[in-house]
Image (cartoon, rainbow over all chains, first blue to last red; front, side, top):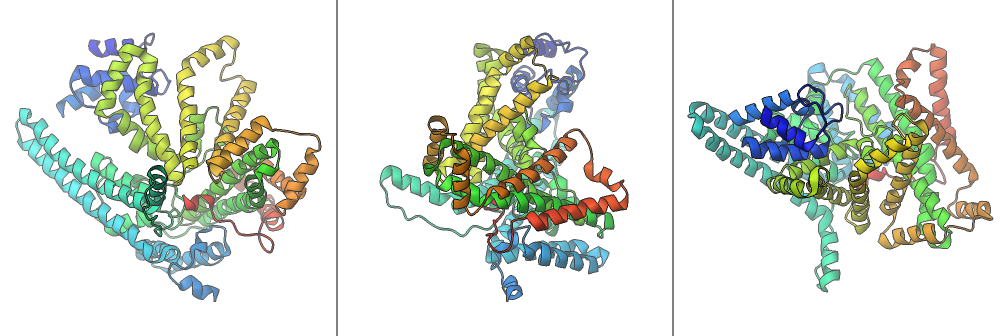
Length: 75
Length: 543
């Protein structure tokens, strides 16, 4: 989780990623941030995020992202 | 004689005009009666036969392309599905370290099948629609003498090809199951209201509801007819009435001052919106009669505050198609991800990902321009919007900061109105490029607007001369203005969340009928039809 928070803070500083649960809905992460984020997550966690996983539910909170990462790592 | 020619396969492309007597007066009533007479269990088959009959009447033997496409969808869908099942069984039985390799192997097979099937569809459209354009350019560039082929292309080709490609990719991505029923797939692709001008439906949106179609209900029938009537008003009173004048301003632009070129571009933008959104009203209204909900293609686009927002509100199903099947796959491809990673380190959090996003955006807008037609001015139209969106993305953070400092918040109403007018002005210039016969005409008109705008003295008599040359008069423009005001008021109310037809239905019967009769009379009196008017084909049917 710490690694994920580090990436998020690097890409979009100044957001409370630990507690925020509407990152996409509240426009705290835009499409450009998602492009960066996907590239960084794949590099760091050694998995592939397919295009179908790019949905708000998977990126609205750090927790949701972590769940997606773990699910894709198991795949 | 007319009915006989209707029965002759492929001899009646006029049926594609949703507001023609042939469609509204003959085909639709016949379809409703036939559908109603069919027992409940057979209704889906009647709908399928009606759809195939409709397409056969407008395309004749070219219906073979559609049948071949559905055969490929059915076969390749089931093939991918069986491989995906085999993969899951093999993964379950394998040890954990081996699972990745097994998945990779089966997913590779599926990707190959999907890729070949998609390539076959793209090749078909490239040959039928673009080979002439391509060879003309090759001949001009290299001095070669290739013969320019002229293929007969079935109406609605660009629409059903995109719909078919979306099905193949969705089955590959496993966001939908492969359909084992070829008739259901055939109905999904061929449903008669959508086949000519879209909307471009996804399998998950319409296939099942079409197959489970229910008997016609009174409230669906009336709501559908009301929607068609609204579209009829947009098409006959505005779009078709404007057509001769727009034609005159574009064709003979060299003889007029620049402000008439600008007026031509503005009026063409109004014409295109009323024509296309009016046709979509007819499509959605027809579907509603049968209890089918189609995805909407327009959401009051001229209230957009940016070009990006405009494309989320104009031809929505085309925009979402490009987003899901070109923008995301390109952005999320291996090389683009690598580019994003390295560019972010060098260019920072904003411009780094923007680089990869822009490559994908360029692919989207090049395809969007080309999709509309095989001509350079369509490609320029796409690239014009690419540049506008790219500039918007580049300057977004700086503009946001500047606006905050100046107090231009999203709640600031005059600023919002300014943003809407700015967006509409940019759209108008794009539509000028789109409507022009070629790049030279577009260039000439743009040059006139910026270098030879006036003289404004005596502009009324210049306007009257241009109107007379097109066979129109000032009264035509006044009628159009009244109709546009009606559409504008309705749009403002819808934008404020008022459900107009719902609230009208709650009013007393006399008032309700007065409103609908007033609309019918308005169309009958002011619609452009009958002697002296040349029927205008739906503008998007040719794309």
